[in-house]
Structures are given as structure tokens and as C-alpha cells.
Image (cartoon, rainbow, N blue to C red; front, side, top):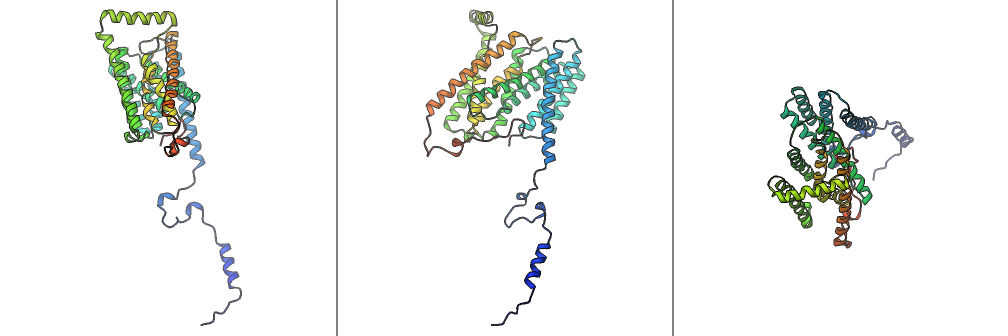
Length: 370
């Protein structure tokens, strides 16, 4: 066996060279074996985070400022073009917020909103003004639903409902700001149909598709659709083709409520919209399929977004009607949650899943939904 001679100082020299070797920065180090190129990412930039926070703050301040300006101009005699311009700006902010929250590209949505709003204000075309008003109502109704976050308790669910109603009410100011002379019922049905279709299309990805609903979820969605269609169809049929005696009884009941309570609550909000929001945000705390329940909350936000159509100002009657609808809907939502929990019972260990045993995280309110 050959003899290996030991060279004095060799080991020490090698260690000294290794100590003097410059250390590569984290982003310049080669990736580990078997890793994909996308696995090695640079650390998050603090400057980018600050810019994003500043952008969200500016958007929120712009939304509040535009809403406040629309409230002010409804009580002050100003040029109608000024009010319509502020309403168009509010529509642009709604388009920006919805595109960012849904994870889409903001530029096409903002460009389309600017084009429609500017054309409507510049030409004063009744068709373009009506289209801009409908678009603002649809954007506000959808953003109000997508702007909610999961609720771990009933109290938190109440807060989410109030936030959704506030966003939809801001949209109502923008809708009324275009000063469009149109039938209120037809306008409300149009906004409701378009907002419902848009929300379902967005929720399809957020809720994991139809396959994640399960048998009970499908039954729930079908029942809610039947309630929505029957309620809207029955109201429209009663208004246009109902017998004079039946319409007289309904008008008498509304008049009695108006005289004794000061306002009449909206049936769709009370029976479907607000309870769906309460139950949906509570379900989303554990299962993403709660988005499907929240989609039917669009009936409440669409109704709130069209509440000021045909109204000159935000009257006490309008405010009381909105308050009654929210309060009665919250009470019904609490009853629905308690009944569902009572019927489902406590799941066993084998039936419990990861989603059922812990809180499901979602991005904050002003950040995109992944």
C-alpha cells in the first residue's frame, strides 16, 4: 500500500482560504438539486409593501370622499354635470376595487369604466347614463359581497353585513348621481340579474366549483334559487297582473306599516339576502363552499345599491326601510344558523376534516382573493 506523505501546514492553508472566501448573497446562491426555478424567490420588498398599503389607503379615501361629495351635492344646488362626474368617478373606483379584490387585471376594468363614464357625462345620452348607472350598481353589489371576510362568531358576521351594506349604499349614491329617469322596478331587476350572474361567475372559482358543494350544498343552492325566482316573479306578477282586490290589500298593508313603523322593509333582503350573508360568512370561516351561500347575499346588496333610484334625497323613510331590512334579516340569519347547527350536530372524529377543525384563512379585506 503506497504511503501518503503528510504535508505540513496544508490543512491550515485550506481552512484559511475557505474562511476568506466571500459568501454569496441569498438571491445569488444556486438552487438546491431537484428544485424548480420558481422555488427560489427574492425576499419581499419592503418598498413594494409600502406602496401597496399606500395605494389601498388612497383608494379607500377616494371612495369615502366621492360618497361624501355625492351626499353633499344632493342637498346643495350645483350643476348636474358636476354630480354626474363625481358619480362616474365613484364607478371607476368601484371597478378598480372589484378587479383587484377578485384577482383580475385592474387596467381593462378601469379603462372601460372611465370610457363609459366619460362618454355618458360628455354626451348626456339617456342610454349611456342609464348604462353607467346600471354598471355602477352592479359593481357596488358585487364588491360589497366580495369585500366580506370570514366570521368566527355571530357578532363578527353582523359587522360583515354592515360593511357590505355600507359599500352597497355608497354605490346607491353613485347610481342616483347620474340622475337617470327610469322605472325603479325595472332598474332594480336589471341590476339584480346582472349582479347575481357576475357574483356567481366570481364565486365559482372562490368556492371550489360545484363539485365541492356536496349533496346538502346542492339542495341549499337549489332552494335559494327557487326562493329568489319565486319571490321576484311573484312580486312582478302581483304588480302588473294582480287582481285589483289583491293589489288593494297589499297596498293597504304597506300603508299600515308605513303609518305605524315609518317604513316598509324589503322582503328579498329580509328573507334571502341578509340571512345568506350572515350564514355565508360564518360558513366561510371553516369551508370555502360558504362563498356559494354568500353569492345569494347579492340580493341584499343589489337592493341596497338601487335604493335611491327615484329618490331626491336620503329621506328618513329610506333609512328606516334599510334599517328594518337589516335588523329583521340578521334575526332570521341567527335563527337559520342555530337550526342548521342543531340539525347537523357535532361531527365525529372520522367525519371531521382539516377544514372543519380549524379556521380557514383568507386575505384581508383590501387585498386580492387568491
